[in-house]
Image (tube, rainbow, N blue to C red):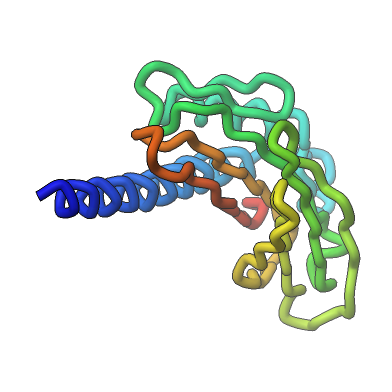
Length: 187
């Protein structure tokens, strides 16, 4: 009976982790979508779509607060009482402007348990239909996580968050996973 209870606990814990991943992904997508409507009005009249990054981050923060109860403190989102996660979510953002979106981009990010930073942003060859984005996250244990490649179809705002959650029972392992949102800047 104890064995079945333990197996059931692992199943419930794994299901909770998947639900959190889905929920955080949705929160990032909604916030990033809202952020990408902040274009420079002067450049837009000249036919150039460019993001006003400070204002975009403010809009992103507002949506993370409204939809998930998160408040930004420097480069982490701290959960509120009704947030889907219990631990802060560090994030990295990168903007690919109108001059570089056709070029491949390789982002290498590092999570060390406290901070999440961009180690390198390496441009690659130019593709007519838009560049390919490849993201690698190096964990605190040195494990390299390759995220599925994304294709950029215009100037893009990229947000990568790293969820590192304590388990819901101390006998279980914690949950750690990256989540990415890539949104084209809106006209």
